[in-house]
Length: 65
Image (cartoon, rainbow, N blue to C red; front, side, top):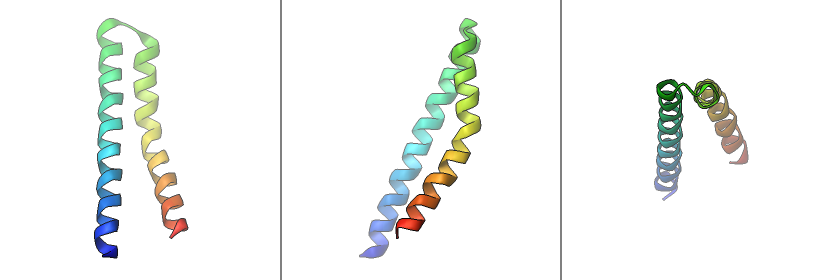
């Protein structure tokens, strides 16, 4: 049973990363398309910081087990 719970956590974590990454790419594209520097920068910085945040969250989850 523990294996199935871990699978659900990993699946939910993966889906949330996919959705957040996609939203940041869309923000970046919209910012570039409409010439809005703030939105484009938000998307770029978000994509740059996303892997760092993922590692921090995974380390916190592992330490709680």
